Length: 380
Length: 125
Image (cartoon, rainbow over all chains, first blue to last red; front, side, top):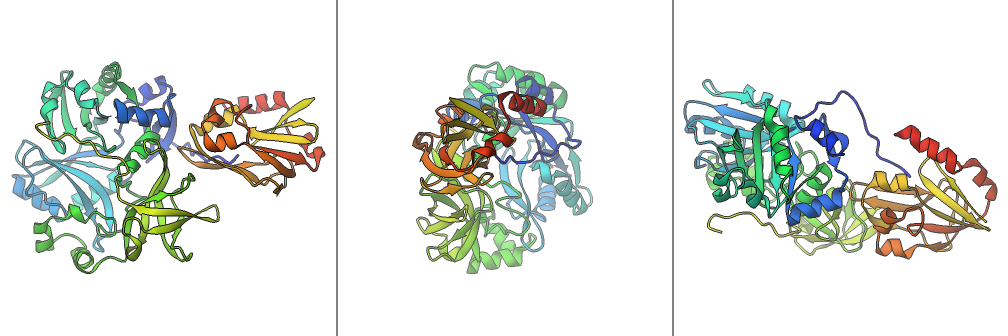
């Protein structure tokens, strides 16, 4: 049997590292960190548990920072110079998913921006593998009076699943009424945390920024709740793929624009009109006239998973694209994938072939998500 | 009488007369994690030792199963095609992949016996 090679260099660790080892996790290198890919329950059970109850994820490797300035308008303008999302319009407590762009309209990273309750303070969460480059890029472009402060002393714990709210309310009653895509500072089990109702699984849940020294004890408290089990990066990947969410460096990168990446929805009307974000000329032209390729969902008709890198052809065998994420969807009960195809072949139900081990296998372009999202809406 | 041998790629081969049954070891299924897909060869295909005999995919990745010996495929395990989790449940028994009619039994001598394989796996942990 062939096995994927693992590199064991000098890896960084998160504040929960000892807990992962204690829980029997299989540790792997990821974005420079020694991270749990799975616990003894295994990827399949962890995935399904998250969809049925609540999964706890260590995402402390991600980059957290405050962007501070004299007032909201100033900090919003500072970050809007680098992203196409409408940050200015955010109400206090609202979160926006947006993209750091290069001058060609390519995506440097995707990130979450929260307008905190304090005027002139934004809370940023970026990808682990990109965080050093992102923060350097942001700092380089900041106007006078706006500063970036990395929060390297904070862990980030995600609690995701249909039971997440019920469990979390035992530690932070305030969080129960929080709407999806909002964040606020609050006391959780006596700790000063930033709680975002958001996630990367397609489920309701929270991402909790917690002081690193208290993180392991807090994670243990959550794990002591009957509904909560630890979930590793393996299930995090299958959960987000079923939810149709992009993995940076795979489904989007510096060579893909938001239009190609099917993320045009992240660019507001005002930002399109102002056309003052990096790569605006290219991106606005693609919005008006179409992009050459588009990110789509793919549903193989057989049982064989199509992994990243799998060539996509049309029915005549001509190459029209490539799979960027693919595997087995435990909740779907079969293989799922996403990838880029020529825009002419990007409509749902278009028949394509996936070249798996030299054989064309029929698949259909499919709408995403592959599973129904169950986010929390106020009043529910 | 049956005799079991192992490769350093974590395949096993059990020989009964001139029929070799091939599968992956318990250590291999443990390393792979949940098996979600198995692709087996056509009956009648000739496979040489070291060639790909099958493909096994877990939630994490696809891996090739290489044949430890040469021969003609005489049977494949349809049960694991229908229920891939069977590989995790009984890798050394009901989770077998293919049966070959041995064309060169001398190849078996190059493979590890049970004690040697146990020692080999010990060395990996």
